[in-house]
Amino acid sequence: MEVLKYRSVFDIIGPVMVGPSSSHTAGAARIGKVCRMIFGERPDSIEFDLYESFAKTYRGHGTDIALVGGILGMEPDDPRLSDSLKIAHEQGMEVLFVPKKEIADHPNTVTLRMIKGDLEMSITGVSIGGGNIQITEMNGYSISLSMGSPTYIIINKDVPGLLSRVSTIFMKHGLNIGKVTMTRKTRGEHGIVLLEIDDTPEDPEGLRQQIKCEDDVLSVTYFK
Image (cartoon, rainbow, N blue to C red; front, side, top):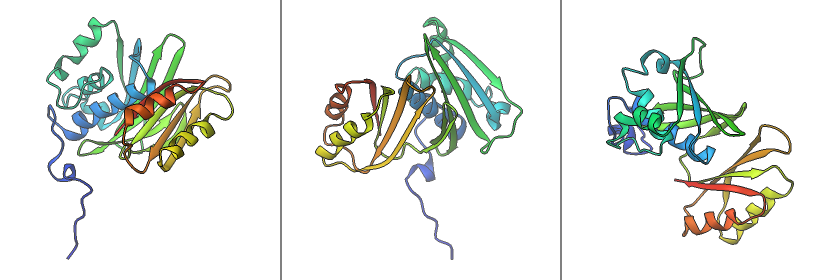
């Protein structure tokens, strides 16, 4: 007899959400929110390139309102989710949805292209079911970020030694870094450091503030 193994209760009953689909709604909202956190602020304009199942059903399954709601900081169960497109318009955010014909590695795939002033960022997210997601690409670099561990997202100036300084902070707090992802668009411009740690910090906000005070760090976001 095969024994079924579940990583969490969400694998069985799904997340609390505004329907209709955990993959197309709850997962999409989480992708939007995580991308907003990585970007660091609300973009002035954003293009959603939708692939396969997302491209075919994004209106009927509420993927469009969920993605924008996530960008606005809403959770999957936020009652304002259905009004997210209207709210984005009222806030002056330009939104464009582009269904793509190309085949993706996963049917529930979206690439977000965000712009605010001189800051541009491209992030690809995948909704893998039950409201769970993966971030698979940032600014053209392939990554694998499940957001299943406590994670610090750092936007920084691209200078030598930053990772060493930040790692020292985690060491002093007795925290082990399980995975590091670093990416940048252009040498000498802004970079992104994603740090997944093994355990939840005793004071996540205090640690975030300490990292933020480091020279050359522009913003820090904590996600669990």
